[in-house]
Length: 353
Image 1 (cartoon, rainbow, N blue to C red):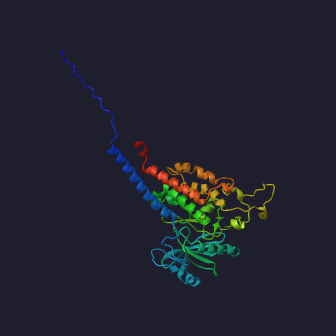
Image 2: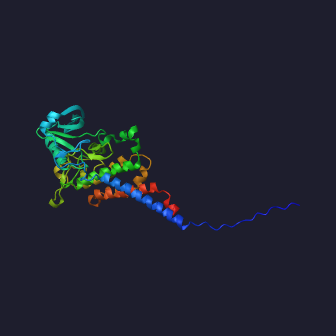
Image 3: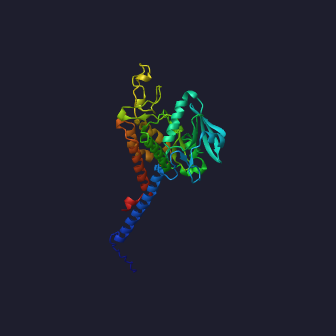
């Protein structure tokens, strides 16, 4: 009779994570955090685009392309002699815009088309001169007598064409949730700059609908945003009791803030003299709608919207005084970006620990 083999069952003690493994794991987490910090720090410097950027020149001067030295703004004589129009690329209520050439550089020449709006044109020039910074299109020269302004050319054009640009093969790699969120942050950075500008608190009045907002900004080749049209930037001065009104016509629709709409109902005809003024919080009301456009419908954008829900709800408070400042919105955007990038970089860290 054969003997059946006996199998000895061994009991293994529960496996424990050694202290060395834990130290290595923690070191890896710290290293990832350090790399993430360096990346975000570099990004914030780029995003903030500080006014002390070395590419900026002293007031009255500009630098274009790879040229190292600053040149004085071009005068009437220089514009007439050295700038050559190539073609008309746009026309609005105030001015006509020409793609032009100056010393083998593409530039943009804007000329007044409606003499009745010359005050708006000159106001835009005044703002452009005073607000030169990394948030504003670069001024190259002007001629007040001929109502002409010369600015830097950006081939990607206005933000109206953002989605089309992101579908060009060259830029498809930019069509991600974090790059789109960075554009939204850039936009809020411009609003923050206008609300705390060297001239005081300025309101972006050319913003009665989304398409109008997008037309006021340019997309640079390195995917930043510049404000381009400064014709309608009234000043709020609370200490002097000075508020603003964006134009003299009735504004309608959900895009404009509640305080910008006629408050006395359909039974009372609109009268500009009876319309109450308002402050810069109208710009805050519009941030969620503009950011929603920037975020688009790419993978991960809905997660970003979820994280921004509370701050966007605060932006839509009916009482303007309860809405956050542009700085508070920007701070929240930065926190969300940091959180989501960290989660993307270390998705399983918490479970590992």
